[in-house]
Length: 140
Image (tube, rainbow, N blue to C red; front, side):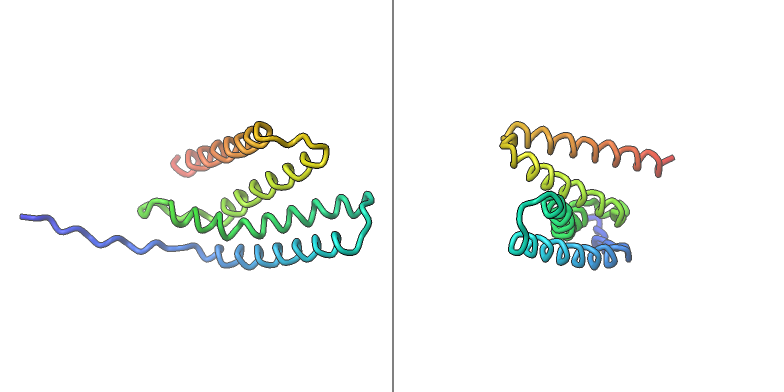
């Protein structure tokens, strides 16, 4: 006799995901508006130079967060608890850090495929170690 399979359970999404998505939208809007203002209205001096990287970081983190959330929700196991909002925020900050560091390294023309690869690899390895540490902490 064939065994009946249970239908897949619906995944519950934490309520803090809505809050971080709103914060991501505000951060992305402020960052992209700041970049547009800096590029259009300022001369390349010290303060606008640093402000550009701050706005780039905000814009990249806010823009990456919905994509990072989608990937975490889509590729997590159904039986596992969903990824908390602080992990999604941290991962989008890693993406923003990579983009900002790549832009910074591009100015003196030090960014190439090898540098970009090892920069990305180092950030990915740090995130893997942090996730393993969190998993070991919650399992015990």
